Image (cartoon, rainbow, N blue to C red):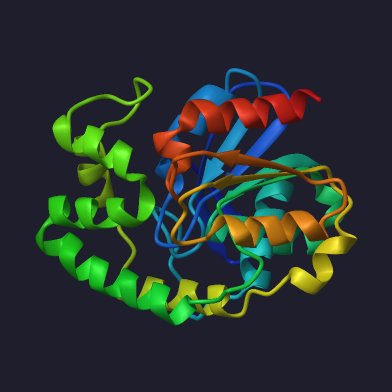
Length: 275
């Protein structure tokens, strides 16, 4: 299905659907957009009805000029599900998306069949630093998309993978994306400085650790051994709090593992959902 728009909570959210069967919803991270899920959207849609969407303040969705909260993001996801007449779904969140999914699961447990968190945190620690990085990055992106990509790759990808990309920026990974493609994709509908501030407001107020033990949905946690932004230790703390949760570690990978190690991330998701 081509891009569509849902009227939710007074704003329009841009979404896409691919595949048939049980619904699986992908929630992206800070300063990102739905296209970041390219590897999961294409592969998981062979098995599920996959929905990816742009959060408020991102991509082609509306960008209201107000600081965002986790409640707003959670209510948007609930509203999108209601709009699509989806009662219950498998919900996958990466980075800030994983924080949104935690809050959503706590607020709307009846809408969550399974919760899958990738490279995320139970707290908004380092929000100011993250915001500063994003603001500085946006200034670089507007002037030099290649520099922006390679600067970001240091935080997102393991050294081994970075070297492979540097050797051949045109190389297609999993037949879906290349460093060159990502450089161009980053320039399309990027977050503005205001969007960064509004998203950071939600990030900075995020704190779920003392409530995670109440989550009853089957939970998969996928972390990366060399994640600089949301260290493996954060995911281990989440794992310790959520009863019967499963933790998978992608070795020699960074925060961008859904792109760099898509085959392993996708397989972990499929194995979990088939249990």
